[in-house]
Image (cartoon, rainbow, N blue to C red):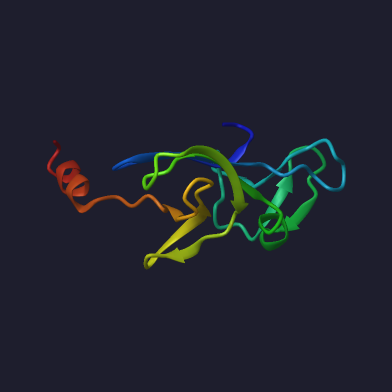
Amino acid sequence: MDDCIYFTNRTFENGRTVAWVFKKECAKCKGGLMIKPIKKGKPDKKSPFYVCTKCNNQEENSKIENELTLNIEYTCPHCQYNGETTTEYKRKIFEGIPSYVFECGGCGKSIGITKKMKSSKSKKSNADGN
């Protein structure tokens, strides 16, 4: 997990996905990893650049994120095919929701990994102290 920029483990009605994106190696020193700058002990998600962990080289978000690959292990919810694939680390609109989209190697149908949203039910129960 420390080597990942993104990691998710999702289950849905008849399938599952595990997806991750490894941190990119620094192009300048070849020894460090490109990460978001640390602010108050946490990565600054809104930072417009990534920083090398060894040489402090800075590169823009777009340059780094265009080169990243999303790795996926999945069980297709349509045909139950178990497989592995990769896709670009870029959300696309899938069924009206921004998602990482890939095709099943068995049936060829598109599968989307949506952004995790907090449900209004869990917000309400947390507010009530339950």
